[in-house]
Image 1 (cartoon, rainbow, N blue to C red):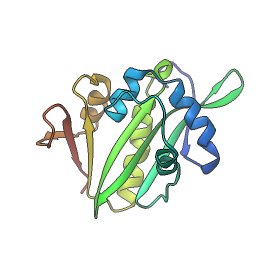
Image 2: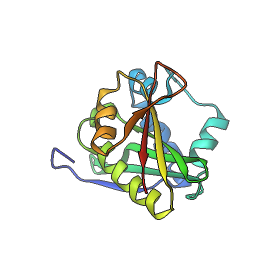
Image 3: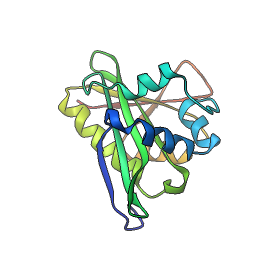
Image 4: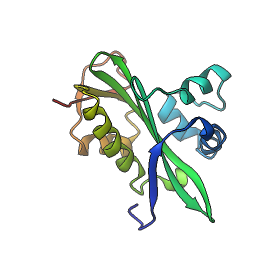
Length: 161
């Protein structure tokens, strides 16, 4: 991380469910709104199932794990979901206490490698305009703004080929 701390980026596992929900609980309402476009306070069983049941083909999810007081905890996560052949949508969330330390960047690097290895041609993301930190990360990786359906959301695209 930027502050010299170490993180482990790894695949989300089925046994991470409790740790993942704990991480979301440690994330502010504002950060959850930036991720989910609504001030999510909790998730239904169906939503939890969707987030946890990944196949690493059409739905890839990674977590950034850190050591916190001698115990590994999830500090953030990133994923992509294939929307149509060759194209996937990215999403990220980082616990507020660890934002600005390079976790989103590390997750992005790993997801880009996986996406290229999977033969994806394009990655997209929907980002709220006030999420300046995430927009900066996407910009550094070469994502470009494109026309999207909602004028209140920035639609970003990266060609991988």
